[in-house]
Image 1 (cartoon, rainbow over the protein chains, first blue to last red):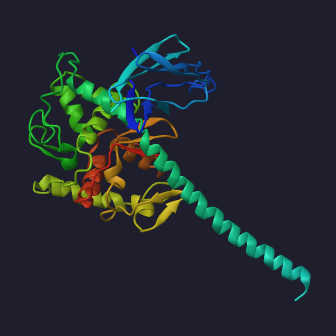
Image 2: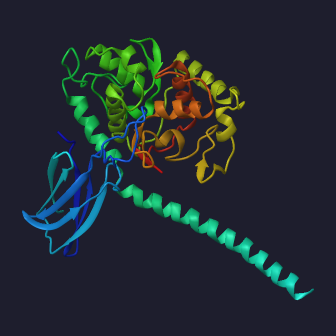
Image 3: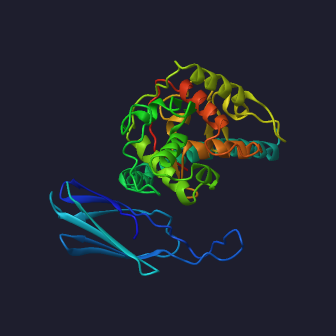
Length: 103
Length: 267
């Protein structure tokens, strides 16, 4: 299974500043290995963020996002104690979901 | 002065000024880029992995590393990073963080240390050692280096490390000191710290393990030193070799009192 994400959700006024680190190879499909063969593409193509279970953001990613990506966004109207969930799905169909509490 | 010459001079002046101006802003934007990177250091992912690996029951003996002695007694992991490399009586050797972890993996978990030492960086159990070293460095973050220098072997390793640092060889007739022996130098946009003395908080020895953004790899001190030798076109010194540990001792003792920022983030 994929390694866990690191999610931090910090309250600033009525907004939560969410910072997410994901552990993923993010192979673009353009690189060649030492034998000259193409390394097959393998990257996160779907990201979803929720606040207390309600979807607040979805993103479609492509092969140009870096390895171990860092994502930052703000959620309006978040309160301390709210649960921020982030999940991703990659091109192999693997997925990962983690949660953090707004503080 | 004719008008043509005057305008040519003005243009030249503009170019000089423009160049100086552009150089300043590119340095500033690199600083800005570095500050931005600080916020989401992927080294945290390796720290989490390392902490998990420390507690996991692994290897042929199916045991965890929680009894591993890193210099402050079995199982103590806070602050050990700041006092390595040091002498260990059980192996009768001066060891750094990574070679000591390898010893623990062999003795406690039953792994084949020689095989892991031969494994290239970034592959197999080498990733385990890097993740563990990253987590352990993080457990001593902001602490100050204070390597022991009481044991004769520790003193000998410092002296050997110093000699290796200044030893010129290879097709380029290079030594570590060729690049790291003067103040305020750089290669392209990389600042080169002067490692013959204490380079200050979070510089040089105090900045590794580090995550390298350009290739997405987590590097420990062993890989850092091995790569320095590669850049000098020296033969590969070997993982956990006495040469790399001696160099680590030299750099670590020089950094006495400097605060560690490891795991750091590099371009």
